[in-house]
Image (cartoon, rainbow, N blue to C red; front, side, top):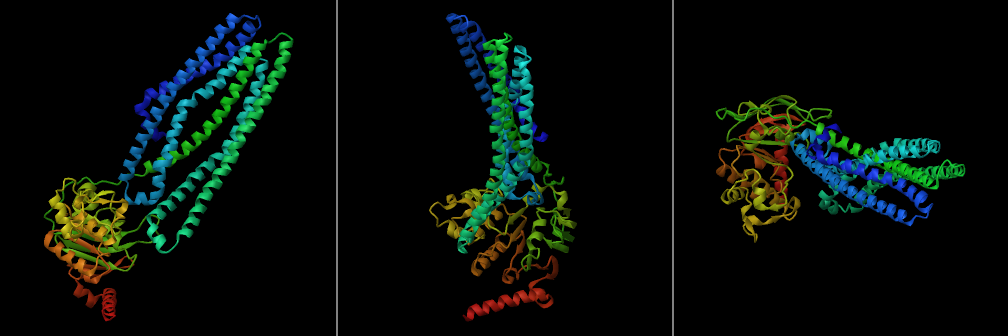
Length: 577
């Protein structure tokens, strides 16, 4: 929580003057019962209309001034809280973008979204309430108690019985509800995860007619939130009735014993009225303080969740910003092994190979054998657990990530496009890319044919996630985006799976002719896509069971030969059909 206080440094004036004006409001509020007592004792008691009017005018002035101070405090509190919230969210978003893949995997995307939105709003609300009420409520309790003692110290003993009793009730309820608020936040994370998965996978859900099952699962998640919230709400609901019951009993006691004090001349009617007002102010302030504790409890729980994100170290950056262009091998794996955090076994084991500039490396293997993991080590999305990944003779861990990735074009397994136009998406690798460069990349990726037929061309809008495009169109634009700027290395992670054989062949030919100096790492399930590769790695259960050309692997690698034979049989079967 302390680490988040630095985002208040630009709002020191609001932090000081906000509570100060609230304090002035509280002072004026404490003055009103004294004025009322004088009106009753001197004005009404002596039937002095002029005095009553004068003191009533004073109450109006006190009320107007108090309102002015309250509004000023509200303005300062809102300015501070919303400014703090803006800076906190900006810093949190920036930090999330600096995290490594491993750190993001540790917390989860849905939880990060929840912490960036819901938790930051809760902390912002806590700051707002702190400025508005954290000073006022305790001051009213203490000030009203002092004023009551100055009126009649014997009668004020009732305060010192009732106030600790209400405080004990507040403490007991808070002790039970604080853990429940934390549990509710965790339930919200689960609901956010289900929401994200359902919205992203809506086509799959409908294809399998799983709408009802997904609704049932979501209903269970929100029911858990509801049950948790209702449970904590029931406990919190006890607070006000019990506190007001004790408060009213205290007021009855004040009036009872105060009446006796009036009978013996130890107290006036006006003083008893003021005393009753102070009693009400104290007990209402305690109830407000209890609700304030609830808000602070939520804020602290959310602040701790946000602090957990800030505690994650940003992605480690190397110091080297220039690489050795004269190195023989542009990529080299030296006995590399890798294991995901909390994983029971290595995903990659003792991988060694090298590839020269302009060559093509194919990676093939069964599902879950480590193909994508291997590719993710090249741009240093993950760091090798053992061994070294070299880029032009330099360990990728020693290179600046920005410099390293500037030379690499990556096309992920899942084609991801962003809201905007085709031109906007095509400028991700190179912001100042010209239309000529963009069109050239689209032509290489076999995407220009359908782009130029659209009414807006490069200005064709793309909806969220590219949902207004087919799978093959999304893949081709994703490939073209990575080609803009002629990267030294192009990583294609099974990114031609939605292309037909003819388009796939045309793309590979265009790639060879248009980008002859680009080193291509192509992950594919098709042996036909990889047969022209200079080297092919055959992966099986995290190990490289074969390394060589297409012809060499057919002769020497049983796993590759089986894949090739099964695909050729499928082709024959489909042609016979």
